[in-house]
Amino acid sequence: MSVQETKKANRLKSGKMVNKLVNEYWQDLIHAKENGKLVVYTTGLPIGPFMAAQDMAWIHGEGYGARVAARHEEKEPQIIAERRGYNRELCSYARTQLGCVMFAERGVPDDMIVGPIASEIPTPDAIVTCYPGCSSGPQWDWAIERLFGKKIPWFNVVIPYHYGRNGSSYMSGQEFEEEVAYVKRQFEDLIRFLEELSGRPYNWDKFCELMAVTKKVGKLRMEAMEMCKAKPSPASFFDWSIYIAPVNYLTAWPGTVECLEAVKAEVQERIDNNVSAVPNEKYRLFWEGIMNWNKLGWMADKFASFDACVVAGRYTHLAFWHEPDAIDPENPLEGIAINHLECQLNLGYPITEERMMKLCRDYSIDGVILHGARTCRSFARSHYLLAESLSRKMDISSTMFEGDMVDESFYQDEIVNTRIEALLESLDAKKNR
Image 1 (cartoon, helix red, strand yellow):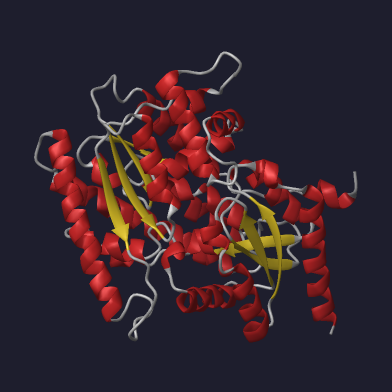
Image 2 (cartoon, one colour):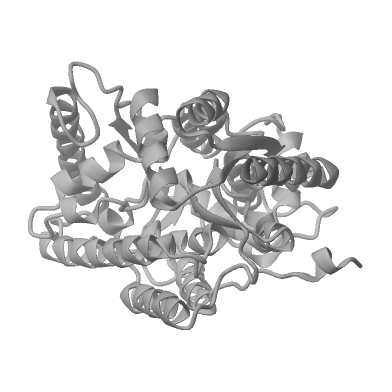
């Protein structure tokens, strides 16, 4: 083994708290129906507090797919979904959850051994879709509804694409204001839907309390990530990928504030003691695309072996309550709409380019990794245009390799290594010039 291969990423230790929260949440979830709770499937943006306020359990489809993949239980659900006719090129989040739902609906086939997380998903009492910038999301929930004979109540929140027309830009302008009002009205309808589903008035006071927690969790995470502007960076994109769970489907779960307080304290301690995420940080990179949940540790170590720290990414830094100050806990619907409209998948190209260039400046980025998730074309659609703009306007080089969020069969290690090496060689040549 070469010296390069022995180098490892220095991951944040407080990530263990996330694992504890996720395990607690899942154990509660699999027993939800035994405890008299309704189970609501959700996909898209984080709306767990809406259900939690009404004492309902909720499953976030992408979060669940990531959980299954992180435990390396994704292959069997993907196989069973393909057997039922769902194409391998379909969103792997959707294909994985659909397979798990088939286990819940019909049982595990005799020729399969399925892990506990993949086989223990409870069946839905309702479905709520809240998807921006992707047509697969509503179709995914529609497919689940069909699996249960179209007998599952389904509510779809439409998040309109924010183009930036008529002088509108990020969080401003007439188009933006009209979109916020439109989404807010749908949230009011969602609350009525949940009242009807549960058969009791909505617990608005509890909802406001949960949104106050959500705001605090969002602020702590954004503040901790912004501390990584320091050189060397105390944490990496791969650390922040782990911390998506507390600000995605766990904001309404006990312990999230303490978890994010711990990570912020650890980041500050690392800065004070000059401890970095990569032992010998030489390159600062930006990850453009969705992360790969079954290969997070593998990827973190791979970049560390090249003395490269992936400092930030669009998926982590421009989503998941990334505008916490917009939330008024006493009247939270408008703030929720703002955060959901301005997430990374929902922005027109000029706004996306402007936000990404700002992140590259703020975090002193040398180069960009374009991760083309094979089954998520909605995220990969602007990669080459962004690469061209960053090269022309900021002299930032980039490279691209194909992978996926949940299906690791799309990876080829040789290509990943070759592309990373080529990018870093170009950065060295640029510095020498």
